[in-house]
Length: 118
Image 1 (cartoon, helix red, strand yellow):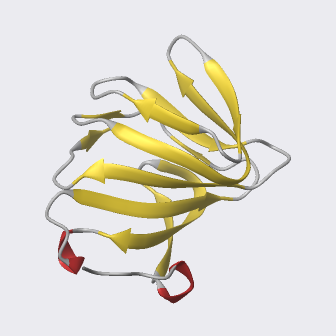
Image 2 (cartoon, one colour; image 1 turned 90 degrees about the vertical axis):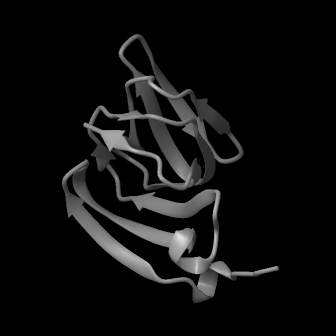
């Protein structure tokens, strides 16, 4: 068993690549930490920051833990708030990020080895 407390986890600032703006990524579990199946992290977007349209080759779960955000596909945009859980199926083109007036944090769960194209 392995237990990680969020307050003790490593936080990295990331910008460029898939991100439009600078976000903070708090890695909770990944293969370097002994997880053979899951990558789990918290991504915090400041107001207006988001990621580009992208596709994963495995399902992705997002759990909103702070603020207001938008999760969008090519067909719709949805406002999401604390407590919402979003399933993004493998192969679905999407983006997510903060609204213009609120920061936004979500915890994500993906399979180790998931490839992301944007």
